[in-house]
Image (cartoon, rainbow, N blue to C red; front, side):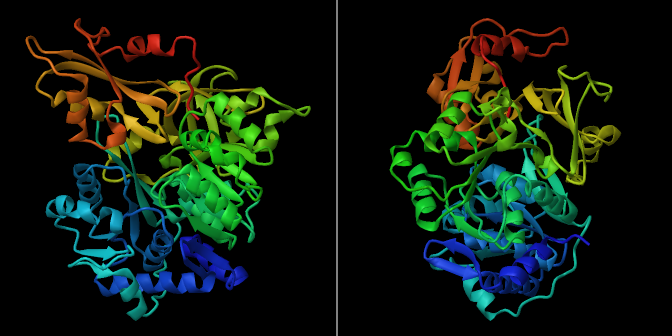
Amino acid sequence: MSQITQFLRRAVQINGRGVATICGDRRQDWASFADRAARLAGVLAGLGFKPGDRIGILALNSDRYLESFFGLAQGGFVFVPINTRLAPPEIVFWLSDSGCSGLLVDDAFVPVLPKVLPETPDVRHIVYIGDGPTPDGQWSYEASIAEAAPAEDAGRCDEDMAGIFYTGGTTGRSKGVMLSHNNILSNAHNMSTAAPFRQQTCYIHAAPMFHLADGAMTFIVTANGGRHVFLPRFDPAAFLRIVEAQGVTTALLVPTMINMLVHHPDVTTRNISSLEDLLYGASPMPEAVIMRAIEVMPKVRFTQAYGQSEASPLMTLCLWDSLWIDGKLSNRIKSAGRGVLDCEVAVLDENDREVPRGTVGEICGRGKTVMMGYWKQPELTAHTLRNGWLHTGDGGTMDDDGFIYIVDRVKDMIVSGGENVYSAEVEEALYAHPAVAECAVIGVPDDTWGERVHAIVRFKPDMSATEQELISACHQRIANYKCPRSVVIQHEPLPLSGAGKILKSELRQPYWAGREKRVN
């Protein structure tokens, strides 16, 4: 039987008196952590929630966020982590589409609720997990669990759904990826090979906890009874300070964070000698950045991870030891690595036949980590999981040693600062401006973000707008990170294919000339 809560029970069994979490001035051991998680399950059951009910989490990184994962699993509820960078209409969609009947929220997002709750009548109860006074109409997390009795484990396991993790959709509609207990435990099993996880591991939650990249670390660190340390939002100076103060051994960051970190003046003055393993992924990693990281953190092992939410999310790992050949750093630094234990990886053609080594095809995977499917989207599920393979939409090659090299995206997805941005969603926001006749959104190279969102716009006759007016209009409709950072006004029609589709490959060409366009 596979249960998320078995990881917590193991942590208590092997290290019950050991430190579980350090969050600001708060710290607790694993026995106390498990008790609080069970009491949270009791609180939610007392409010009338039933196993299988979906409950959203809208909060910054904290020990209470971690408790929520395990408390919801204990009660048999389905957690729905909400991207903290969404605009209110997008939060409404995620809550409504998933059918959330409850929401856990902290101080940072209480001000957003007046724009969200009137549009989400199915959300019956709000549990406040912040540090200030509990707002009117909400349940105090601390007061409630202090009064509640610990709940018995609801027994949800194996192929029961544990969470819904939303990802973007090429049609502009977000997709809810349904992950089971098996999916999440299998992913933790895969992650166990990425670094030497043990009781002495001290992991810092610096990437957002709503993101499955951080989630991949959450469960394996817990299973080994290690320590969790929390950084509410990533800041390079704060990251370095906490690594030094708490003896952090392990971290997972997106390349944008690493770029900020290795160019921060404190990186050479802080004592970060405790840091042993730094995993990265989720967006392109410029070679100059990883080389700088190796230079300023010479004792750290760097491991690249590749995957997607639909794979829970890990599909490949490029382990530090595999990068070195005869004592020299090899070209494998550009690779996404090899398939992990519970996910078979192949590069397939349009008929789902494996292509010859070194030939570009679509990266596909199958195994225990592959999702249950998309929430309420059976046709899309069938298309994505056709012929027994998860189709990633990413193009790449495999070499003779099984290393994957990702060359481009099959889908028109932009990865900016570790966040997936889907062009159709941005284009929809641009088309809402009355002056826009035609537009295309593409990703172009950016030294800070890996890629930036770039719009090419043609106006209607006798109408116009400034670049800033177009960007501001987008900010009213979609999250800030999805909005264009640059706009080009074009007077002639955009290039079209024979089928009448805008040729984005042609629009991208001048920006990517002479560059390797890769996804990590």
